[in-house]
Image (cartoon, rainbow, N blue to C red; front, side, top):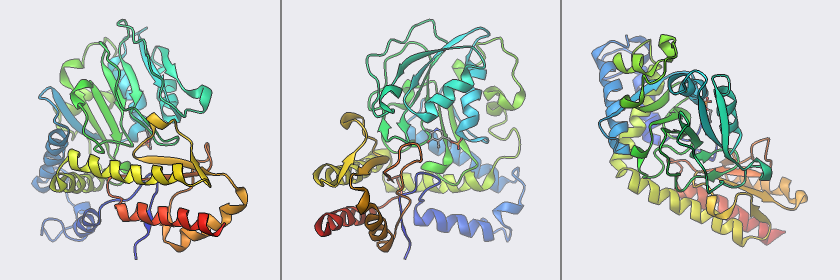
Length: 355
Ligand SMILES: *Cc1c(COP(=O)(O)O)cnc(C)c1O
């Protein structure tokens, strides 16, 4: 039987996505060729790219100003592509520092211009999302991280802002239905709700580009990627095809409203147990708890080994907390069934009973 996979990323994918991807590796579109051995300019793959871009736009209800790209270099490359494309020479950008990834994004941007910390929760080990933000109109853009994968916090309401709003949605893209048109640029590594590592989804407003005088290397210029319809160079075909299968799966399941309801249900289920069971406690501020990554501690060190063994016996994997936080982290991405969360909760209850 397949394991209950709570891995934070790369992570669980829907069974039909894994099956479809495996099939395409052996024989793609009945071409008698593998997806991995055809030209990316072949009509069969160009259609994959076009559909993946279109379907992403459709699921997020993005307006016509948006283009969706599938680029390489992970979310980490976007940490520097964003300032490259949006920050003026001697410019200034605002960053919301809500975790390790946000901090890394700000550190990269600081190579391009001045960075203003608009808010930070580092004083409490990033266990909350700062509010009452003062985002100045003089900034070139404001950057935030929608879901903090490592500490398990999530922005529920994005701040009003007059400057371009840029968001790293790597670990909660397509997990809920929000107004995606409030952003100027959204990016997400594929490997947390979409597919295998290798592709990064970038949704970008055309009207916001080309406003700086900075000279850009072609491969880092969103306009070049848009112009070549996300085929500026050889794209990571396997990651993009698998992402397309996930996008089709999400649409078939009923779109982001349905996915969001399921994710809420799973998150409520585990947090209820974390709050009820005296052996455990959650680490993130109540209102800011992530629906994707639930972080919690087991207080009694001497029960740890028992808990780990029980989890293993139940087929649970991937729940160790990030090395910077410790404890446990149950990541519940779109494809994780409620049954897996129920199994984990059963183990938590069982531990309580026998201790
Ligand atoms: C995983 C993650 C990243 C890093 O993504 P890479 O594709 O490995 O560069 C960045 N931001 C967030 C929020 C993440 O969860």
